[in-house]
Image 1: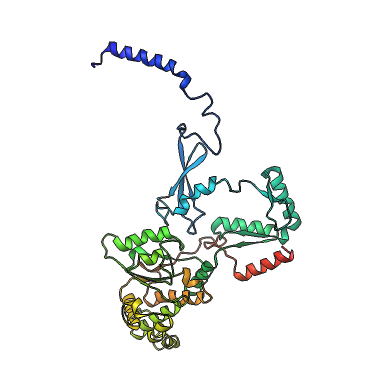
Image 2: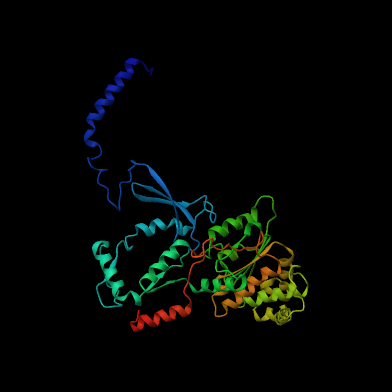
Length: 411
């Protein structure tokens, strides 16, 4: 139908009549004025969204995120493209932060114990005045017998928590899983740093991992996943070689060129066996002057002929003679530079975990992969003396002491 001025006016009149006739079927008055804090109407479109930069405290790597907030509620979490660790990517734990925020079983307010100690009976109270008054009175009366337990804090958060605990006469302890404690201790002993290092996977040509499931749950899988993608398919480079020595067929082991299912707890012996081959054949970096030293002679006790049967290696696992496999692996690791050796997870979870991880990370010194591109990158110290860069974590001795104090009623 041809659109004329007459037709246009006719259709406009019909539209006005229809709007008046259908007024009773419209949205009820006040539908969008009173909003439930839990369940909002799905057709709510008014307002504008705001994006706020923050840090994810759910994943262990503390990734940079941006949060989409509309009408005062967080709607979406995604990676911050300007954050150096994840560069716009995000871990699934970060994405699930909204579920934790709006979960019906979350703790939205302070809780006061309503039953005997250890009964698990609590009642919610408000911050003002009950919550703050209760906390204030407890700190004034028993502050010197208190302990403040947090996750491993660093930067200004660590300073605030430590000063608060000191002001009331108590102490602050950071809690972390034991395998990370072992990992931190190994980094301190081998590299002399409290801050955990970064592994430059994207520029490496050879990755030798012992128990570290870095593509799944270990440390920063988002950071390592991005680097691993460049390691495999980066521009202007060849595809790297990756060996995973792990007692479990993990996600990382499934992506390796070769998975070696070593007997649990023997990862450190395998590492020292590789070091023995590198030293005996003179494959180590020229910067080291260790030929004929006592340490080099002590490595003779870890020859592949000795370690292979002790670690449970068989011809079916290695595709041939296990001794020759270890020698071939040591030569490839030393000659395909830059190479990086990573240890963690199951390798550091046993009673000899510290020994295992120290032996693994020493391999990086032998091939000159410490502080260079494609190797182990050490993080710089804090520019401020009183602001730590590494999270403060309580040792096993600290937790045993605190446990005894709680049982005795001293804390």
